[in-house]
Length: 485
Ligand code: ADP
Image (cartoon, rainbow, N blue to C red; front, side, top):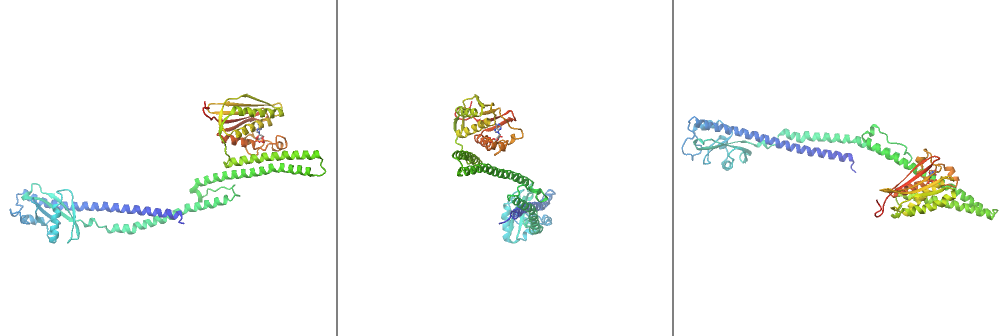
C-alpha cells in the first residue's frame, strides 16, 4: 500500500507541474504578443517613412509618378524610387486602382508564385490598424504586414503596405526552453524532495502516537497518558483528545471492575448463608422445627439473590440500550393512589405515617410497570430510612410542561459527604449496617430509578439533610392527547 507520505508528495509534485505548465504557457503567450507588437511597430515605422517620402515630395511640388500611365509597374518617379529603396524591409505602394506601383527589393526578390500570393494577401489587408500575418513558401518565414493610407492620394497613390519577418515571434527562445526543460524540472524535483522530507516528521509523530496508544490500551496501562513531547507537538489537539478518551476509558473500566467486584461480593454473603442453612437442614440431628427455620432462612436468601440478579439484569440491559420501554398514555392519579396504598401498609408495619396531601389529573406517555417500580422504590426507601414515629408525604403536582411526583420523609437523611454518591451502583450510606439490618438493600434501587426517569425523558433529583429527612422528586414531561395545558 502506498503511504500517505508518498501520496501527498506525488500530489504536491503534480500540482507543481500543473502550475509550471500554466505559467510557462501564459509567459510564452505574453512574450509572443509583445514580440508581435514590436514587429508590427517596426513595420509601421518603415511604412511611415515610405509614406512620408511620398507625401513630402508631393508637398514640395515634385512629380511623384514617372508617367501618367499608371498601368505600368514601378511607375513612380526614379527620384522617389531611389529614396524609397533606402527604406529597408518589405514595402509595396498601391495606387487607387489597387495595383502595386512600387515593390521594394526584398519584395522583388520573392519567387513569382509568392509574389502572386502576396498580391492576393495584400488585397485583404485591412485599411489601417490591424496587421496581417501570412507565410510565403520561398521564404519559409512568416511575414507581418500593416497598411498606411496616403492622405490626398498624391499621384493617384492610395496606400503603402509595409512588412517584416515575424517568425521570431513564434519560436520558443532558447532561454525559455532551458527554463522549461532544465531549471523548472530541477525546482520541481527539489520541491518534491523537500515535501517528502518534510512529511516525514508528521509521519514519525503519528507512528510515535500510534505506538504509545497501542501500549496504553493493552488494558493494564490505562493510567498512563500520551506525552506532549517534541515528537508529538504538531498533533497537540489529537494527543489531548486521545488523552481525554483514555481518561474516560479508564473511568469506565474502573467502574466495570468495581461493579463486577461489588456484584460478586453481594452474591457471596447470601450464598454462604444459603449453604449454611441447607447444611443445617440436612444434618440428621437437626430437629424438625430447626430444619423449617433453616429452610425459611434459605428461602429468604434465595429471594434476595433473585432480587439482586433481576436488578443487575435491568441495569445491564439499560446500559446496552436493549431495554424496551413500552410507552402508552398512563393516568398518574390512579397509579399514585395504588403506590400510596402499598406505602400505607409498609408504613404501618414500620410505625411511619404516610400521607398523600395532593394529587392531580395528569397523563404521561410511559411504561406503567416501570413507572410503578420507580415510585415504589422511592416510597420504600423513604419508609425504610425513616425511624418509627416519622412521616412520609407523597405528592403529585402538575405544571405547564411537566408533572412531578415527590416523596418527602422525616427520616435519617443523607450526609453532605455521602450525597453525591447516592445514585451510584451498589452505593449505600452504611454498607455493613444495611446488609445486616432488615433494611438490607443492595444500593441499586436509586440507580435503576434514575435510569427509569431518564428513559422517560424526565429526571430524578434529591435533596437531603442528615437527621432531618430527604426529598426525592421525579419530573416527567406531560404527554397524551390534550393533556398539555
Ligand atoms: P438501597 O437498596 O440500599 O436502599 P438505593 O439505591 O435505593 O439502595 O439507595 C442507596 C442509598 O441511598 C441507601 O443505601 C441509603 O443510604 C441512601 N438513601 C436512599 N433513599 C434514602 C432516604 N429516603 N433517606 C435516607 N437515605 C436514603
